[in-house]
Amino acid sequence: MKRQIKTWGTLLLGLVMVSTFVLAACSTNNGNSKGNEQPGQKVGQNSEKKDEPKTEEKVELKLGYYSSATTDAKMLELINKFQESHPNIMIKTESSPYNQFFQKLDTEIAAESAPDLWLSDGVLVPKYAERGVLKDLTELIEKDLNKDDYYGLEFNKDANGKYWGVPQGIQIAVLYYNKDLFDEAKVDYPNENWTWDDLKAAAEKLTKDSTGKYAIDPAFDKKKISQYGLTFFSITEGWMTVLKSYGGGVLDGTLKKSVINTPENKQAMDWIVDGMQRELLPTPSDLKSFPSNMAPFPSKAAAMRIGIYVRTIDANAAGLNYDVTLLPKGPSGKRFSPVIANSWVINKNATGAKGDAAWEWVKYWATVDEVQQEWAALGEAVPVKKSVANSEQFLSGAPANKKAFLDSFEFAGTLDVNAVWSEWVGKFGDSINRAFEGEITVDDALKQADTDVQKVLDEFYKK
Image (cartoon, rainbow, N blue to C red; front, side, top):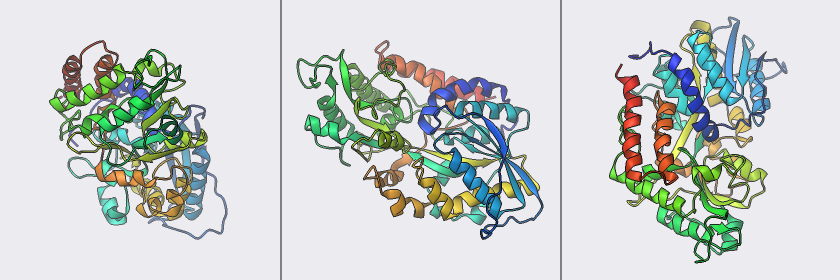
């Protein structure tokens, strides 16, 4: 790989950006789990053996993952079941909350002491792959997996057709809406024919001030908002969806050139800024009044939100009467749903028996229906195996229209992820957020962002 010797020093600085843009978007970590490193424990001696590794040589694997109170117990349970069916493999786990996990991981990579395999946030896979840290899984996938059986494999494929990870769970965005708030305002529920202008028209009828007046009322006071029509946050659950559906975006097909300063992006940004100026959507500073950027929808302070699958957990916990549908169309009828394939990746230094054992774990996760079904029951992600995702087990329960998540794969795409994703997202946000707050014009924001993002790209790709 051309850039295998790229220094890891710059990545430690980049972790600050990752915590801002990735944690809220891709992770279920609630910040309460403590770091741990422990050997897996064998349980039960009578289970039928599955997927035996090629060798009976005793192997110890170090497996890393970011921890979550929602998923930790199930992860350890599945690890124990794997060891039961693979008695020659012992797994030692290394986990900690999201930010700490990836900060420590970068330090370990620099010291060549990283886990043999780990669960990577999907937006970070190119960061490791383009720096020569990961094992190329293309031949193993071709040999052992039927690619047509899975969602998300293609999102770990680079421009040269190489695969660097196997999805563990999928996050894909849809439009969430609170049915009670729509009923109260006497507004029809969203449907699959909505455009972004249709959404804004509905948002005007749903945005309410502290006196109970909606934004369509001349007496509405936009300085005293009690309920937003649409909550809107950052890249994954905010601006990228609008930019892409308007025919714009941030990077070109090579992922090495900025295409920010375009008429399509200006039209999309004008739509966003207009909604924020009218307080139909919260600005970044408005969101600071909430416990978290994710809080408006489950707290009934917003009637709609762009949301990935994991947001169903908070909505269900809050007891909301809600449902989901496809994201709206842009002016030309184009849709875009951002997708994040959180994935198992293997350290390139895991060779020989360790490499074989690491792949056995990845294959176990991807191919054993019981594993997929048990993980799906947590409600943390869309299952990667299509047969499980399309099963009654997954599709039942709230929200009623879960199929919208699966239908969205038809027009899904990544967040223009590359080796310096977190860095360029930070630079883009620095300019765009100023436009959102009304401090600079959309034209100036796009020009500045285009310059700043291209500089980040050139610093990595042209050296």
